Image 1 (cartoon, rainbow, N blue to C red):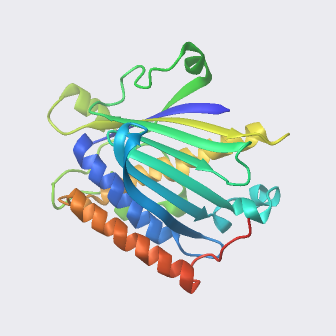
Image 2: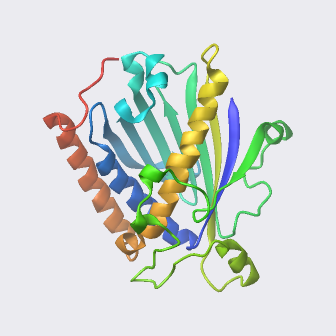
Length: 271
């Protein structure tokens, strides 16, 4: 098992990030349900009262990941493995997300716990880890401005160095925006997503390579890009209420269900 803690400061409040995160999830679910062998099904999206973090919202999804993984990775897996289930418990400002394959529960899992705190990522141990866990984990800070993004995924409209919000007048962000905040605390909103990611892929001869690959993809193609989008989509989500978000989620769930039935997304893969 490979354990990393990612710390992602964002120039917004914890309350604003909650809306940004949920808006982004439903929007990307729609966008990613296209292409050969790809699709998202939302099986459940309902409140819970006794689960991780206490009371929150439970979501159960199935991802047909198809062509979204490298050919060398697909080559070692049966077709049934190109289906991943996601369970998430959102008890904001705490969340937990778990990814597994229903046929391979014993050797593959990704478990992500997240705390959202009003700081720049300087707390030593928000997860109250044991001494053993601390020795196993490495800390990997992420900067949405300076961390690199793949050239083919770069979009001018999603560049924090260029983006300025019409609604909030925030931005553009300079390369030293975190240092600038630390020198003038309280001048602008701030928060940090602390993400403890545990990846386990027990496959003889490939374990270390695949665990590193999953972490690398999770950081470079998911976390960096997604948090840049959360900031640069600001004028789309700013001002929305939780009632607005739940309505968008319902509309997205129905739209994805129609795509799967009509065959616009991936067909059901054999288990």
